[in-house]
Amino acid sequence: MVKKRAYHHGDLRHALLKAAAAEIERSGYENLSLRELAASLGVSRSAPYRHFADREQLLAALATQGFVELRQRYEERSSASTPAARLRACGHAYLKLAAERPQLFRLMFASDLLGGSSPPDHALAEAATACYVAFEALVAATRPGADQKTIKAVTIAYSSAAYGFALLRTGQRLRPFMRSSLSDEELIDVLLSLDVSERRQRRRAVTPIPALRKPPRRPGRPP
Image (cartoon, rainbow, N blue to C red):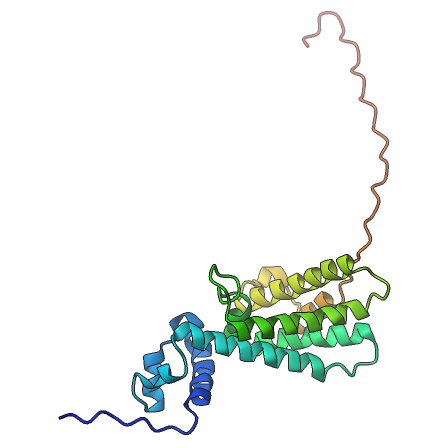
C-alpha cells in the first residue's frame, strides 16, 4: 500500500495566508490555486481544506487582513496636529497600501467578495465596514457642524477620488501624455488637497442674448 504523505505543519492557516499574499502579488488573485499553495508548503492537497472550505474563503480571509491592516495604518496616523492633516495622512496610507500591494488592493476593493450576488463573508464585511467608518469619522472631523447626509456624501466623494487614482496607477493607465512631467508624489499632493465642498453653488441668472436681426435682403440679391 502507498503510504499517504502525513500532514505536519505548526500553523498551516497562517502559512497559507502568508504564501497566498505573496502569490497573488506575483500572478493576481484570480489565478490563486489551493493545490499549488499546498505543494509549495509541502503538505497534502487536502490539508488546506482543514482551514478553508474553498479558494473563495481563503481570498476572503486575505481581504479581511487587508482591511484590518488599513485601519491600523489610519490609527497610526491619528496623531497629526489637525483634522485636515489627519485626513491627508490617512489618504497617503490608503494610496501607499495600493502602491505596495496592488493585488491585495484589487482584492479588497475591486473583486466580487463584497459586491457579488451572494452574501459576503461575515468577518470580511465587519472589517471592511469598520475601516470605512473610521475613514468617515476622519472626514466628519474636518467639517464640524455638518449634517450626516453631507458627511456621507463628502466621504464617498473623497473615497471615489482616491480609489480611482489608485486603480489608474496600479493598472498603469496614467499614460505619459496625461501626466507629462508630474511625479506620483505631485499627483498625490494635488489629489489629497482637493476640497470637496458640500455647498451647492447657486446658478447665476443669465440674461438671454437677444437674437441678432438679419439685415433686409436687397432686391435682386439671392437669399
